[in-house]
Length: 385
Image (cartoon, rainbow, N blue to C red; front, side):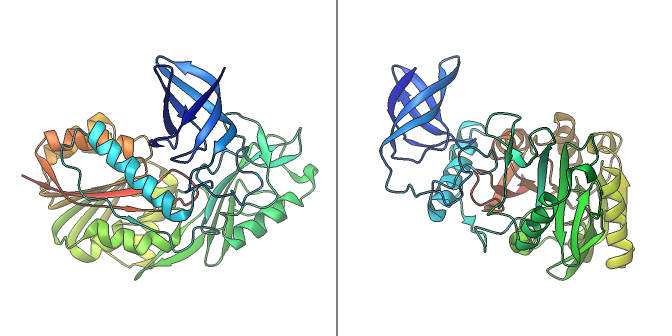
């Protein structure tokens, strides 16, 4: 079924919003102000999900996507928007989630800090492998087929060079069961997991602000190094005190600067590889003695705790914090909390509970860690009472 629609705005998830024939229409890869002929792909209740058949009148903010894979590759979904309009759309996405999901009557002003680079910024990626089709790249939009990518325009130059090296490797040298490769760059090279042929899971180093971190492709690390120093600075603000708690600490991105400000820090991370790197970063690189890294699930660690913390930071995965974690945070009743999120919808869901439990928003800022996509990192500082 085809429809003619006009895109009103961009929604969480990156869809363009339209209305037609009494139904709500979500359109992939649209720009606000587009007039389109769209093809309905599926229906869910009163919502139609559609793709563009024809651009009847292009929005003034629409540009020609520079990547030849755009629309087929599932990696980027905002290349049709000029960069300043990407930032505006992300601010609107956050605003929508805070109003609609968190039920905030008054939404704070939302500033999205732009990335120093909107192309060639990405230091981490996952490359999908299809031996049958001899394809290496990313999943196609809405499928598990691999889009064979020769040049990915958001990869840092050293990762693009590594992609070319992987693509030039003989297929007989690939492990027969290899489905995907994790890859991350650092100051001293590129790390791949799993290792094969001449590619190794190297331990890397990276300096951010006054701290140095070590990690590899098996441990999560943020993808856009150009924004990490201001992200940390805003997340911590002016906090100091006796005890801080860093939940979902990863390799210790926030742990190290927290340890410079507090007498003691508990850093909790469920992934054993990330927790090992966090301990190494604390003890060997930062040479700190006031941090205890705990390799345990956050909900499990919180359950029996009655610590009197001055500050608590959480940086959960895209799914947000589990209900038991939010309950544990409310039980702790730390005077100040910072929530770092890569998904405005789950952030808003969790903020609703924290606000109902007595917290109020002190400051909010977004950081565009993910140019050319609808994703955005949001940091909210909260205080109790």
